[in-house]
Image (cartoon, rainbow, N blue to C red; front, top):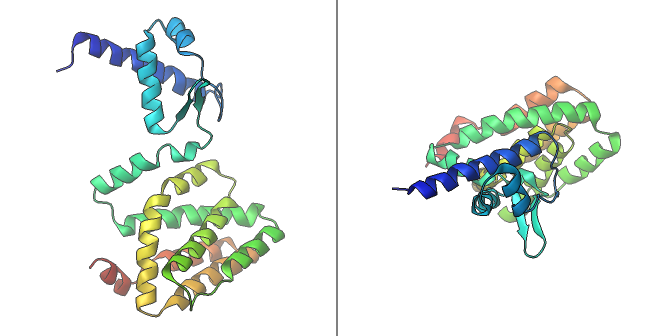
Length: 234
């Protein structure tokens, strides 16, 4: 059981957490900004420095703040990495499935395609075409995995919606695991041409600036047939 002093410290540290989170939401603290000193936050919030340190420790563990010895505490420059571990753990604890991941990928990549059609330049789409044009038939699983990953991330990178990018990056660990499983299955069945066909459909729809065709291509590419679902559930 926690002592009264421990309960008090915890409550005070939550005050500090709220203070820092509010400053981030209001735009008063941005990526890479240095936090106020422990002493100044303790005085402003009327809490102990121990409570401030506990809050900073919690933000460190969440990946929102990084501490540099002799310099101070800073808002992370890569906020998209701050929630991925927690989301992945919750997904596993709640018995998340490959189908769950694919459904969310379809939603996010469809919206990314919609934005790419609206904002991407012809030069950017040409670069995407060059990424897509790799050896699908005579390569290792590691190579195919990296190339597939690069192609899909390049599509999302064309999106101007920051939240979509953050959500997609948050899922990267889970997507990497399941992507390898799917690609291994296509290798085992000698059906790598399906991956290439899916990429070609998506790219052609983007070049044609056809939103409906792009969304259809993403759904077709990422949806698993009954045969694959059965194979991957074994």
